[in-house]
Image 1 (tube, rainbow, N blue to C red):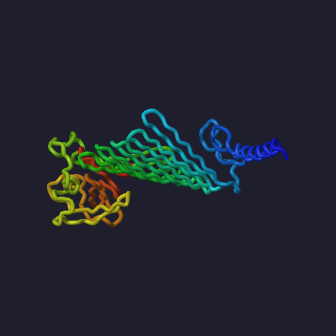
Image 2 (tube, rainbow, N blue to C red):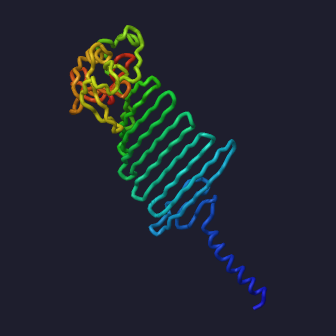
Image 3 (spheres, rainbow, N blue to C red):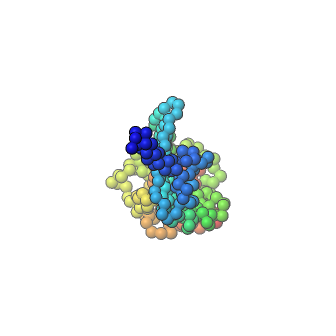
Length: 316
């Protein structure tokens, strides 16, 4: 066998696997297997509708850099049971990461988190396309305050119910709620104060603005005692939407909280039993009262500006 013949055979054997491998990469730089897998084409997405039960997992990874130190990395995997992907982008001290996944049984999830050295946020959603049920939660913070929210709904029935908590730079904590049904969105309804309803801002306090005092339970709204003070009389506890247990304390006379209860003719009672008026006050505080003809049982937040309570559910 001469030298030229040997060289030709070697070259042929070398090209066969290369040609075979080339069939695995086509289109816009993604994977295209004919029977399924990743096919990015011009849209940049993943088309996996042709994946059969015998499809083998595939993976994709791409990194890029841009001006001013920007970088971005995306990884993804695909198989017969679904797909998953993750993207992280950075620019200086700013970072953002997003993830997503879907499975053949209808389950899906996606999340996002980011920070820039000044503010941060996190959010996530999970659900099932077959049942329509989904859940979400999120949180964030800046030097001016922080927030957290959560909720659940159903895409088939167009319903949603969620609640949120926000704390400002003064330490005041507020609670809110959102309810949606058949495309109509409701927010908590204000229960007009029967005594101070016609007063201007802070009219209940002779026109002087009220601010929560740090290191005091409820900012001093319910009484002038420090957080965790041994002299404070406990009045039960509740478990908030974020699964945090909040202890309740007895409301002291001549306080904004006492004025609030008296104006609505409410009588404080220990938190814990069902069917109570649960009022979330400043600085992550809570008190409970027996419902009456003015205020029905349910969850409420305090508006210290007008000394009103806001229901977490829309008015009937």
